[in-house]
Image 1 (cartoon, rainbow, N blue to C red):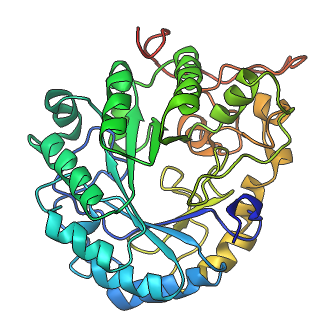
Image 2 (image 1 turned 90 degrees about the vertical axis):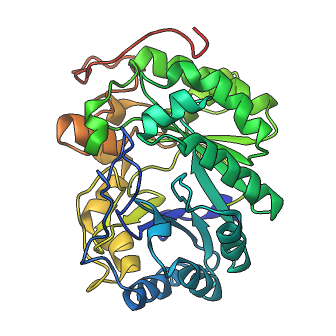
Image 3 (image 1 turned 135 degrees about the vertical axis):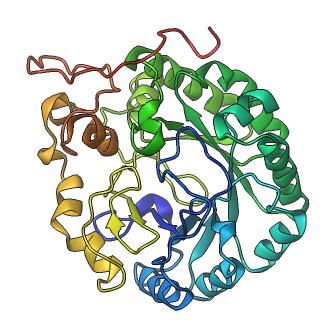
Length: 373
């Protein structure tokens, strides 16, 4: 399978299954507003296996991310990884950085067929990271888990949230990402849902400067760089590369098939802990339920997904933008801020030439400097 040629009308690059919302941490940005206890109506092991069987129908090598909450709260996690691998799926994991993520458990998951592990680092020091994650010791546990993954040859991805509280940490986090030997740095620009609604986002201008800096990092770092809920990073990269295309080319893919320009419902799908099928966990508008519906059919044919994949459905300046084919804005942020998933993304400051329509309301934001300011 060549991930760069995947038709996102037919299959997502990334299918996320939120296996549980249970988690020991109380992270300030948590989309799921996670709780310590597991929900009694979570998909069971057998229901989860049926979901993975359905997901395999997308085609060979479909990427599946097991997320949470903390997936380690489920005792059947290694069993699910093994089963998914047997179905031909590329199984990856986003565990929480807690003491339960031991070297032995990481090795067992690797032996079960896990292809990549993603860990969240939102501060370059224990003080900064632990304050954001709401748990003393989380930084030490996360770094130890990252090194344990490296010991067993399990590729590591580092996820980092960008908001007013974390943006000044980015240069130092970049150095830590390199030190840990990560293969990919995934930088998530805050969407105000769940507990994240209480945090301050960065301003559109500062988001733009962060993306310019990330593009510079991507050209010199030994690891890949991608953004989450910020597809206009692709537009920024194109503009910084002296106009290598006009926004119509498909974005390049990384080694496991992600594109810089994927967005909710277009290259991305999410199944909640109780089976609801969403375009994204940050866009919790249900188009079906995995208990009764085939996730492949929902992704391909549900009206919500089809509209999100049609750039002509976009409103405001996103609909008029020449880069909408490779960007299209964050549909999750548009929904969270305006109530309309097809509205313009309020985090993007770019105004298409000749556009004289309404501009999106700007939510409260912090800072206009570069990441190092």
